[in-house]
Image (cartoon, rainbow, N blue to C red; front, top):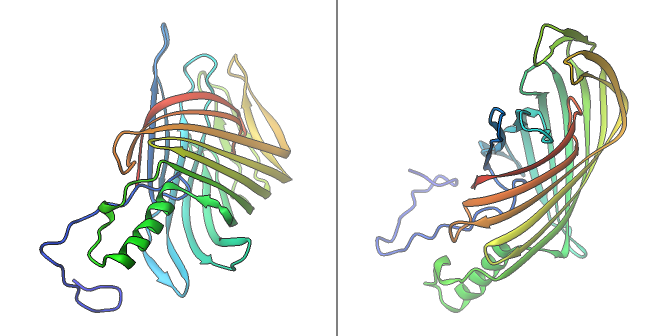
Length: 304
C-alpha cells in the first residue's frame, strides 16, 4: 500500500482510530441515501428515494474528478402527495479557491449530465457549471468547528486525537450558488400514461437554464434544520407532457422561473451523524417534467 506521493505509510499500533463527523448536508456528502415509505388507508404504499453517489476517482491539477449519480424520485399513490421525479447520471470536476477577505471559499464545479426521470421517457444531455460561494463567518458548521478545535489542540499536544474534541453544540451555514444548465433533449420521445393506453410524443427541445441557489443550515446538538432553495430560470421554452386526473395526456410549454424549496429537519442517531431520522417538506417544480411537487416525507438518511 502506498500514499498519494508514492511513499509507504506506517502506523502506530497504539494509535486510536477516529471517525470524522458526517457531512453536514447532501451537497457536501459523497454518499447520501434518504429513503421514505408512506402508507394510507385504502391505498397502495408510496415510497421516495433521494440519493447521491459521487466518489473522487482522480486528481487532475487542482480539480477532483469523479462520477455523479443523483436521484430524487417517488411514486404518487398517497392523496395530496406529489414527488420530484429527477435522475441525473454524469460526471463532475471540482476545484476549491480561497480568495480571502469577505469571500472565504469559492468552489467551481463543471460537469456533464444525462437528465431523465423514473420512467426514463426524458433524454436530456446537459453541460453544467456551478459556483458555490462561502462568505467569511457564514460557514461555521459543527464539523468545521471540530476540525478547528482539533488543530488548536494538536498545537498544544502532538499526541491529541480527533476523539479528544467534543462536538460543539451549535453550527451554522449560509452559502450561495450561481449556476447554468445548457444542452438539449436528444430525441423525440414517447410518454405513456401511468394508467390506461394513452401515449403522446414529446418533441425534442433546447435547454438553457440559469440556476441560482441559497442554502442555509442550523445545527443544535444532534438536531439540524436545512433549507435549500433552487430558483431555476428556464430561458428557452422546454416541452413536457402533463397527465390529467383521468389519465389523458397533453403537451405543455415550460418557461420562466420554476423554483423548488426543500426543508429538511434531521436528528442524528449516532454521534458522527452518519445515520439520521429526517422529516422533509418539498414544494415547487423540478426538471425534467416540472410536475408540481408538494410532499412531506419522513424516513432514514445515511450520509458519508
